[in-house]
Image 1: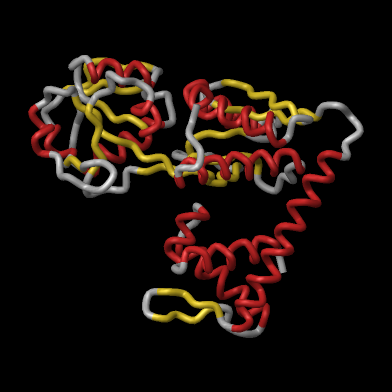
Image 2: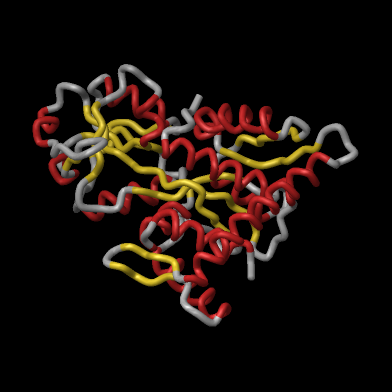
Length: 309
């Protein structure tokens, strides 16, 4: 049985439902259900039974969860010990990240490594996401962290975080009165902005794929007043009343003069932020640890135990 199977069983037990466990693991619910069926076929008995809306472990499930947690802890201790036994004073793990996301995500990642893996040096290469994909395909990089959409043939995209795209409006925009109150952040119907001018990113960037998807869903042919390669510029121009614009949730937390931002009603406005590498490639232990550490930081941020720098 793979360690991944034990991790998935423990995740279902902690979340109590397959759907919530799938969200916590950043995989689809059908994929997790299929994997659970595979585990039960392997062990020859049911691992969970459904009681109402809650997944409850069977006797076999309780045994797997109890012993599995111990094995996972021992595995983590072993991997940490192996890392510490390296004879060289410093190990280097090299990866790519876009300049925009490096501003928000690297401070926390570097701080985490300084505290937990001081013997490992992070070597971050900053390039546009599309350039990083090409570097990975060409073998000049083993690993990069970029948004998933759109995917390129020959690459594996392993989601580590689900990013939500918001719609930003100037503070005095009349559509602010049409927002629908909801827990966390209010919603807005994007179709209300069909006649507005937009501040947008240049089409060469990966986000243009998602932008077109959202606009098509609401039958909007946006009038673009300005295009930029910088998310922060979009944020500042929308806040200044130049136009409206789509924004990732992370950028709206930085500025006190941010535009008023809403979740987009009636459509999935999230996209995965992924670790990307070549298919069939065997990543090193350092690279696997980096992916797991990055995912752990996002999980802590979501639960409120970690704040981005």
